[in-house]
Each structure stands twice: as structure tokens, then as C-alpha cells.
Image (cartoon, rainbow, N blue to C red; front, top):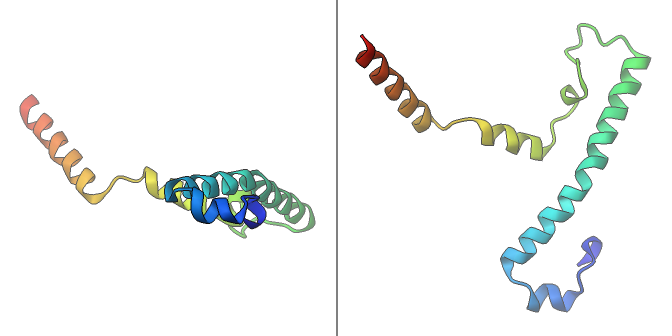
Length: 98
């Protein structure tokens, strides 16, 4: 519906929930390059107009973090259980080698 361009009837009656979620995710993914390009442009303009040294802004990523970037960063971090399992594994390997 709306900006995505799906007819109302199809959206409400013909599509399954998982299909709607994938369509919305695809639509959002199409928007990413535009937002990232706008952030990069803002960084270049700021760096040309002002002295950014000491401001903590070293790249365009320091200006704003988009939700998909936060999700990717969180997805890459191991859970506490995984860290505990890895620690136990390392300790057992170290004790076997001594």
C-alpha cells in the first residue's frame, strides 16, 4: 500500500504476513543507499566548512548511526552465554596442553 505500491485488496487479503514483512524489508533496503549517501554528503560539507579536529567526528559514521547499522553491530556481538562457552573451551584447551 502507499509508497510501496501494493493494491489495498492484495495487501489486506491476498498476502501472508511473512510476505508483507519481506516486502517492507525490501522497500527499506532500497532506501538505505540514499540515506547513507546523504550522511556522507553532510560529512563532506561539515568537514569543508568547519574544523572537525577534536570534535570526535572522524568519519560519516560518527554523525549518525542508522537502525540497520545498530542491528548489524548487535548481531555481530556474541551473547553472554556464547562468551562463557568460549571461555570454558579455552580454559579446557589450556588445561589439556599443560
